Length: 302
Image (cartoon, rainbow, N blue to C red; front, side, top):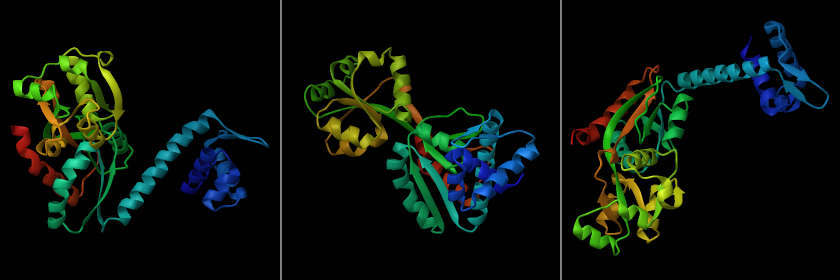
């Protein structure tokens, strides 16, 4: 069994066509057919049922396809890692809050201290980042919730909390003057929430459970994947929202929003560094992890 045979097989299944597979791999169609035949002879099973108009992948073929995809991906990752041995690149997957508010604080100083390190950064919600990490798309991840997974190390580095934000109008100014934030106000105004896969929304769901609030009791008018849009919409008077305190410091200081603490302990959360347990992290990756944890270590003890 050779890589080129597996590559041909994967391409045929992926494109559902011998002709298309040959075009994509820059091989002749007879060569693709030979690769498939050699695999079937070696494995003593039919992998693909051919007809004049279509192909059908057998159950054993589907099983091999999943295995072959993983083998080829591991090969590609290994080659990439070896080719980049002398290029210090950190592939970072980051959820919204770390992307917008943590990296801008950490990266400039880190780059001054380590000018030879490069970053490839991709943003998604926390669930996207975890899935990408498990698929070896990233070296490390920065996410907005703690993860329990046998293959992942989850290291808290920043203590955050969720807060209620409102426009700076009545009755919210009066509520601020009174120094009280009753959960009854949650039911009286339109509510904007984050998307389901975000760490922020995960924490707010926990908070809702603790104070016995269900989504059906709220006037939910939108779910958004960007906290900047939520801040602007709330500032413009569209409704109220629950958001990371880290994300609203600028708008609060500028008077664009009012910010109210949520009293329950479940409103607190940790932002976390995540990476695969099996990985042997290179020195420049460890240096970056140390830079992040040292920058925010005081938040975990307050």
